[in-house]
Image (cartoon, rainbow, N blue to C red; front, side, top):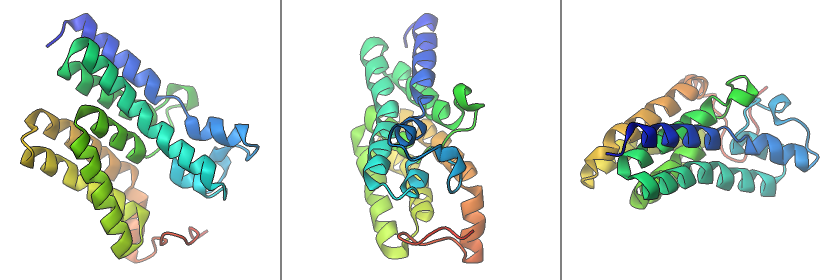
Length: 200
């Protein structure tokens, strides 16, 4: 494990990376308005897609993932695996609670994928694979994200990446919390399907 200063640097750098509101920046730059006034008001890629601009939504998804991957990789390279974990988690929570936006951020799915790729890329691939399978079967983005988040810590354990079980579980639990409204709609049978608009 690195020094206390290394860990502090990793936490601060990771958090600051995570707080970059790419969804807000990109939608405003593209002349699509303030994403916080559209749909769910969320700054993540799913809500950006509600603007109808698929390219901006895809770019938001990629950049939100990278702001988890880059801190994990860079701090891991500089200070070691524990620093990578701290930086990744800090980036994830920076996305959820960005200080620039009154601590109201996204739901964390894309950034958690990016963190998993930065810590151990097979976990990122497993997350995406589970998401795709669930999306094809149930046609619900939220259910796909919840399922993949649930599987991630189990996959880390199965692959022998025991240091990553807790970080994956923490991110998974947070994703469940940020999706509590979606969970309620799923249980009521009211969650919109992929390709269909969210009910008013």
